[in-house]
Image (cartoon, rainbow, N blue to C red; front, top):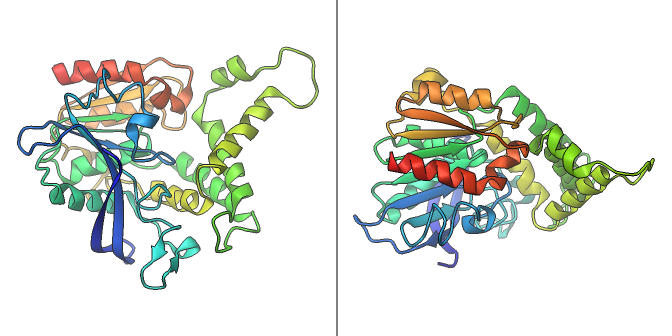
Length: 336
C-alpha cells in the first residue's frame, strides 16, 4: 500500500524535548487481518526509507522470503529522517517554519517508543517477526527488550547491542565534516551539501572491505591521477547528496550513538536476557563496522538465539547486498 501517515499529538523524548504532532510515515505490504495475519515489522538503517521492498529486494517482495502474499509487512520511516516522518526539514507547528538545526535527535529508545504507539493504534497485538540490519537492528534489539511479550521471532543482521567507541568515533568524524561546511546552519534545504558528501565518503570507507575495493576499484593501467576508487567515492557522495539531507544525516548519527540496550538496565548482558523471542543473529564475515564479534556476543547472551555467519566480501554493506542469502537463513530459522 502507498505510504501512510500517523500523527502522535504529543511526544516527549528522553532528552526532554516535546514534539507536537509527531508524524510517522510508513509503508505496508499485504493485507492485515487482526488475529490472523502474521506481521513482519522491518526496521531500516541510516539513510533508508519506509519502502523496504525497494532497498531490500533480495529479501522482501513477491516470491521472496518476506512475501506480502504470506505476511503483513510494515516499515516505518524513523524520526529524524527526510523521508516522511518528522525530521529537521519538517515544519515546527509552534513556529510554522522548518526545524533545520533546531531539531533535536531521537534516541533509539525514543524511536521504539514511538513505534509502539503506532503498533497499538494499528491494533497489532503481536509481531511474528521483527527484522532489521545495522541501525535497523539497533531498533529491533531495543524493541525486543522493551516489549518481549510482543515479539515472537527476532532476526538481526550486522548489528550490535550498543554503539561501539569505533562507531561513535566514525560518526563524530562525519559530523565534523558536515559542520566544516560553512553553509551548514543555513535555514534551507541545500545547507551542508559539501559536508554531507564528505561525511558519506567517510562512511563508504567503513561500509565495504579492503577486498571489495581492491577487487572492484583497482586501476589496470599506470595512471597517476583520476583513479577508479576516487571516482567511485565521488560518485557515491553525489548520489547521497541528491537523495538525502545534511541535517538528517547529522541528527541520525547522534541517534545511532545513543544506542545502548543496557542503559539504566544494569548491563547489556542483563538487558539481552530479557529477550524472549527465538532469535537469529546474522553476521557478515568482512564487516568491520559491526564486526562478527558483536554478533557472537549477542548470540551468547540472548537466551533462545543462534548465530550464522555469511561469508561475503562486501563488508557492512553485505547486509543489503546478500539479501537472498539472508532470506534463506531466515526462512530456515522460521521453519525450525
